[in-house]
Image (cartoon, rainbow, N blue to C red; front, side):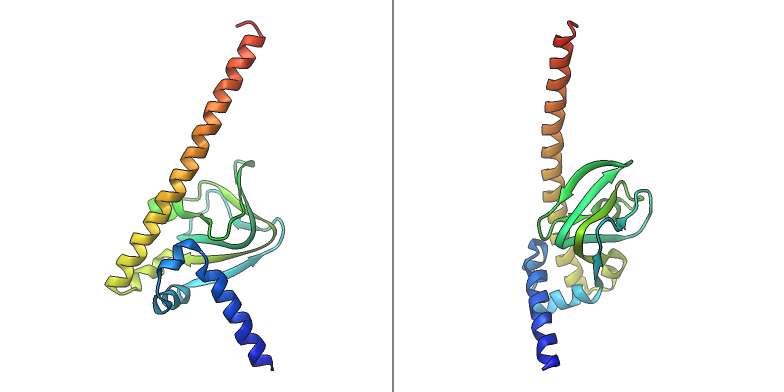
Amino acid sequence: MLEAERAQARDVFLEKIKSIPFLTKFEQEDLQGILQYSAVRQYETGEFIIDENYFDNSIYFLISGSVRITKQGKELRILRRRGEIFGEMSAIDGSSRSASAYAIGDTMCLVTNMTHVKSFSERDSLVFYSLLYKTFAETLAERLRNTSEELVNARAEIERLKQELGQ
């Protein structure tokens, strides 16, 4: 009976993993290869996931829970959707982490260390990087749109305050 419960839990977990938009494009065999070089990590409320200015070569996919992203102690955003990616900027440009990430409540992430991708076959590596960079581009475009909207709102608020003060 214990084996059946484990198999069922594994199947439920794999379904969650397969529902991550980035990973839906991979065949079962390729997905197993990616998971071989990934780890599932669970975090408790308030636990550090990524520390600003630290360097590592991992990218994170949110499986469940929520993640607070901060820079210099100020909240930038909260990630809540399964499959949201974070930590990707270090993987793109090789620099240290530009922000910190903390778990909000019980949180589970799929963590892929990008140094292992070099061991993929040429075909798998090409597919992986093509899909990953497409995902990066979509993520960065969404964040840029949000930042642009915040900038427009901040400028409008500055103008409103100037008018109130008679400047």
